[in-house]
Image (cartoon, rainbow, N blue to C red; front, side, top):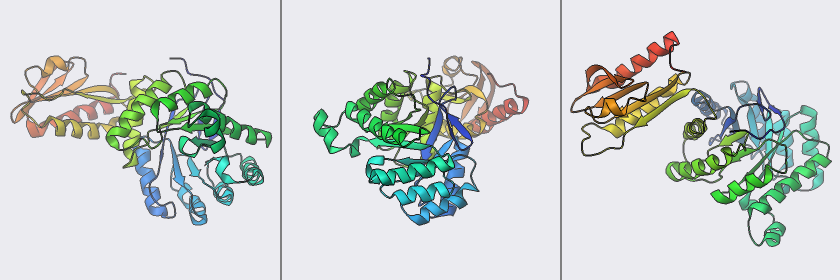
Length: 358
């Protein structure tokens, strides 16, 4: 698909917009003031594939903690600010690579100007964020409720404020927990601005509901060539957000590399803990993200090899035993407890030789 060309914006050591790939973001759920826990979580997220990380900055202590956090991580650090413009200024001075504000809740235009001036001084991008839950009363009345049109007007109004203040180093995000409203808002705004768009379905929910809503919403938006960074918002461990975001991008052909795990649905012929085995495989293959492979996990030694023919590697289980499969051909028969180690050994070989399918 052709992606819409947006303005190129540098965030720390990364670039979004222009010809840059879509980057995956997440947000820490630790207290930013707790530097040790926050750094530990960010490093876990980095290993999972997170490319930009956001942290909450509700206090001056949190803003000042950014200095220590920055020295121990390797990806851009974004400060999330609400209400207090002084926290935005302190976050920039403490090394934030980008700040996220809603100018509407920062206060007077003088306060927004103070934040813009500081961002301009440090050349730190501002992400203008508007959520359906905080849409201005005047726009709700104008459009007869919270609507996609209202979200777009609110965001572009805030962008115009900042442009008039002499700054255009901007990223826009418009989010709603209503998936179709969010999709429509992105379709509208993409025709009215050149700024990069950070895309996500806000308050998406738990692992199950959040993944479904995010996959549908992000899929519809990204498939139109809209979006420069994404976040899958889930209630839970933020590492799960990264896994889901990578899967969405790969499914749409927007990210290359990594191992795709496919598994058959369980049926009456299944004589192995296929659900547990598939989960183990999915977790194991994350360390081989540099390979571009399809791995099949099958629950039937009779049909497994044929069903796994399109996969590069596969395993199929029976009663206490199973098969290691390569392109639909049986490589060897193994005890059930040897299947996972044997699959890992194959991946290590491909990794060491660099001969993994591309």
